[in-house]
Image 1 (tube, rainbow, N blue to C red):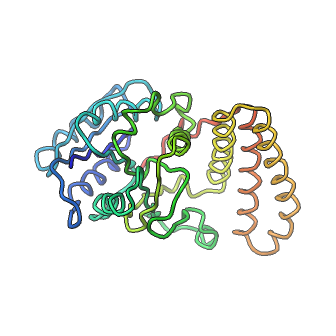
Image 2 (tube, rainbow, N blue to C red):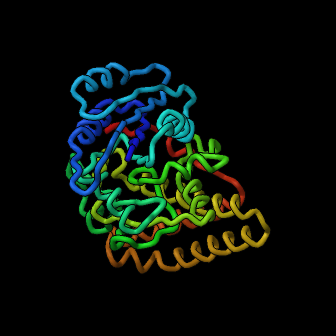
Length: 308
């Protein structure tokens, strides 16, 4: 069995170094690999981490390949990574440059894939903070993502922790959509298409990665902007993949209904504490994003780089 791990990176040398060190420590007790290669694509023509990759490659246990993609944008870099990783492999995994995997991460993904005969497998992303965080962040669990039992069927996925059959990528006529260059959401759009094609996607709760969360993201402003962007992505993808009037109307109705619910709930939320009020504000912001996405409006969340 041959596996490739794809990593895209942009001006995060410290984060990339931590990630590569984590990948170098991977262990396999349930899976037998004939080959494991790590493909790093730097989304920067300056090639600032080329020397770092060259230095690490001398003591790297796996095959390490480095490439650049000069056109700025997440899907451009992901598609370049796939182009270089796809030849001869059975599975491709994605992980982000602000994350570190548990040593058993990839082994757990592969084991779950075999056990459930899945086409894609996703796992949990646990937030890690290098600095003290406000109580309202802890109470609100704003950086905690939903988790599921092993084998739980899921509809979508993200490229911060996912494994998929390489044949899926070989068969699809279009990979990550380049319209999402700086907005984010190309992975959600991609995996929705995978789901619509009938492929089986499941959850592996033991395949854990840890995400470094910088102080610049632990703010009310970032949380609201993030919620808005996720809302635009949700509606945009639904309308784009089912471009009929009924889809637009359903998404618009959901957005409007949620805005009204959020507005009425806000005064009561304020009485229950700051974290509850912020949850309601995020709900409203997400709902406004849903409404905006119906009309094709987007927000370039990834124009700003958060160093880790």
